[in-house]
Image 1: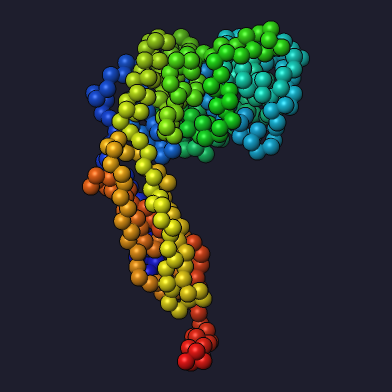
Image 2: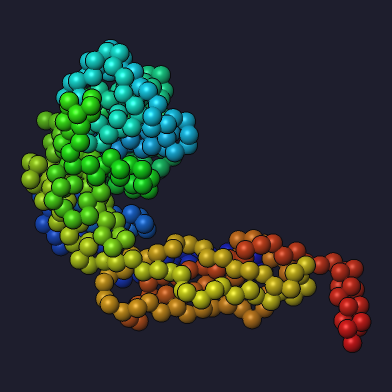
Length: 380
């Protein structure tokens, strides 16, 4: 019965989740000219605006969000290092579009290659890195699709690592781009590159200027990736952070660079003006709860659920109300939901946070009970 109650409480918490306190916009609440767009907060993954967000479209070079994600994950796992040398193949050197004009046999470090991909969307560097990591671009694309599946991206399929070619089988959606962008900016390393405005390679001989102009003139911009072809039109995954809150604005098939950038800024401006993160962790230490007939006399608690909630700005501080039993009966299993914290702001519910058992507490057997009685008698 106790396990059933715990399950029911957990289900209730999941169903309750966030209140309408951070309710998303409707399509007609804000003027976005692009046919497909989405606004997401990084920490919680909350979607604040969407417009045809699951519509499959060719993303052009925004494809490289996934390319960069795999590169960064391999760097942070230790598979490759930033100073490792990458040699350009004839195939990589043959790629046009946005590029840094690699020559066959030319060598650059992983860090330089990543910089070129992030700043100027270098197709030749993307292919060189794909071949360096997987042996061929196609094998790397297989990894891209596998990673998309791991992230639960249902409207994404890649046939290349650059986004240069639209073969009808290469597509994603505004929502899926936001999810992969969120995953990418979770690696702080990438921002060392996506926030570069101007730089150079080859000892200063070849200058780089970021294709994402928001990096230069939008406050807090952290990236992330632009894209354009005649079929994709103007695409952008724009990320920006202020006061510890970061948002992702995705725009697909914009009519021009200006309209694409204006749509992204409209979404980001709305988010920064209206929302903030609320901590779901009160300052008080979590108590230990008494346990009857257990191998331990008490059990510690841990937080379950999210660490933050996205809420509308109000200037009102959150209030925390604890719901805990006076005592528990063993056995208790690590992860059992034992109580909750109700978080309210200005009288409105922001979230309900489960409190779970930090450890197992087995029930003592017959001889254990006898031992407890003996200790009790001896103490008397």
